[in-house]
Amino acid sequence: MEWHTHIHWILGGFALQSDGIWRGNGTELHYLEILSYDPAQKINTFSGFQSDGSTWIGTATFNDRTSVEKMTVIGPDGKVATCRNDWAFSADGRAVSGKQECEQDGVRWVAFTVKGTRIKGET
Image (tube, rainbow, N blue to C red; front, side, top):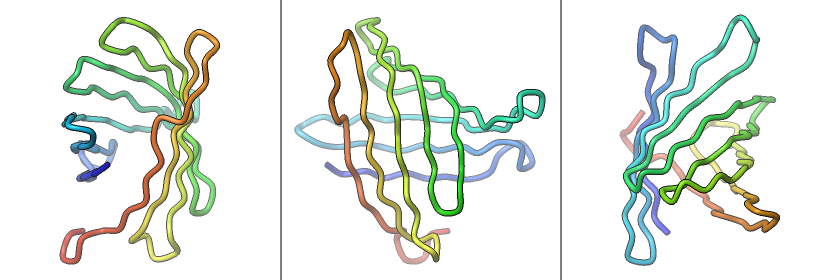
């Protein structure tokens, strides 16, 4: 599995955009995700779109160098899954590891596990 992502602030720093590519097992998927803070509910929210037609919406919590995302995913077949992403960041912010676990129709699975580092010269 290969994962490339580009994350940057948008809308004057109000929101964060993550766009990238997942490659593996002969498949290449492009995605776009927007994260923002909802001041009325005092939560971090996000929504995403993927080139296979999948969409998702969820919330994220941050604690020190970890983050937990809980989301509802609608697949290209219209089926709905609930997923949880657990992220851990290095102290210098240059490395990340993550895992996604999902459940659909009573079946649970690990959708991905990743580890990565920033490419030298990129912010």
